[in-house]
Image (cartoon, rainbow, N blue to C red; front, side, top):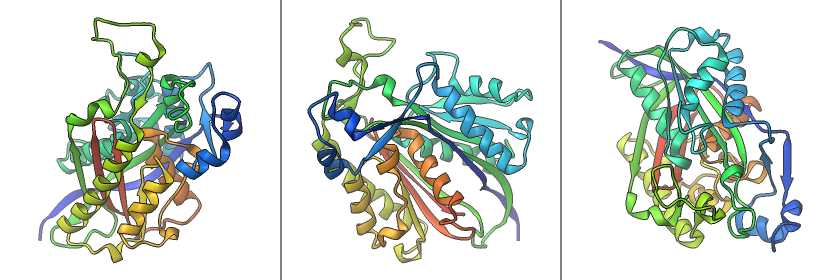
Length: 333
């Protein structure tokens, strides 16, 4: 029997900015109410980046926590991946800035990956391939966002959703005997995209557009919420079914669902379709809002550090984001 390499999560970390914005604060900014926001989204509060912070600051803080918990030094990392929609600069990549700030001097590759809310799952899938092919031994995978910087705070249907933060995981290569069940590690990832839905959720402007304007709406997120909601619910159900079927696993075998934290109604609908009890679904959207690529690693870190998710348990990570993009990761923690 031969052995191969699989990716095992050895540590997680997270960081949330100090400033907390309550729904009551939004009531003073736009025509909305705390009750309406909670009823429609499940969100009670979100964290907002400080004026003197940038996305890399959040990413570095989460990464430092993960590295410390793993008992590693920065130069033990062989690859840095940062999933973000809100990079510090057009270039260089936020990942290279994080690499520098962490003191990683071993010249390992570092790059950003942009798939909006599915970004962390995409990055996890890419990191897993690097490990499986033997190119690296340990990867640092971060989801980090400063969504408040691209939020139109006068758009009452949109500004209530977003929050800032960062989450990180460290993956390490472990030997796996071929044909044997995975005792701990990433079993499979599945990622998809369909660009025809671009206009339903996007930021209209970008550095390559000639017709740049000073219009706030051109530089901030716009979303057709009802249409996005319908596609998201159906797509997340489909990716969950696909993941379980392709890996010959029944939904009853799942211990945890760790979904992208976009909307409590979407999260509950997905859990219900999988036949999971509410107690098996990790929910942080009420405290964090939608933090895009940071939402899954933030939720994962919280559930691991508070002792809910334990070694040997089976969890499904899934996300849906602008593009549209969507994906999943089936992991035996």
